[in-house]
Length: 146
Image 1 (cartoon, one colour):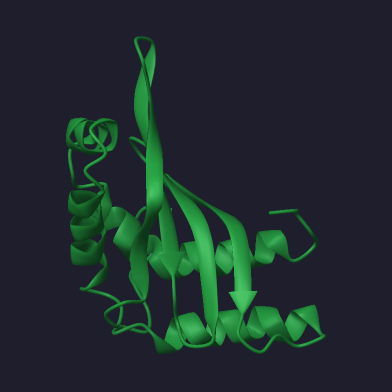
Image 2 (tube, rainbow, N blue to C red):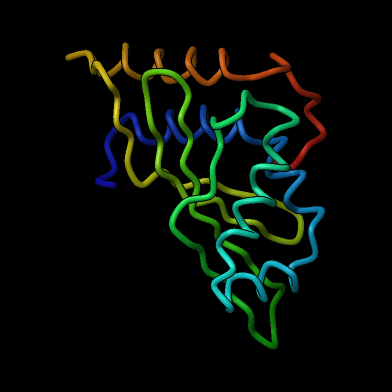
């Protein structure tokens, strides 16, 4: 996605929303993710993402995307990158979730609003409201992965 002045704010909104899902996924051993990614077991990866998301979001809101990647080298900790599709009402977010040893990060590739406003601030506010409406729990403890 071409970065703009709203990209960072929107990534923060998405990161805050999926923080508990990232925390759940980080409980899975990195070697398991690597094996599933290496052997293109996308169905199993989709099940893991769905299982982690079902505790926090309405079904179908957080989905495994088209694939993922991993970085594994002798001199550093592994990093797992999963493609995600977030589909709260009225918007679809295509993003990559990076899972590391002590953290997680999100990078948005594309956002598609069903009825976009000409005002980017309204679109950003809509994204936040839509993700909030798709949550089972409206706020989470701050001690989770960021």
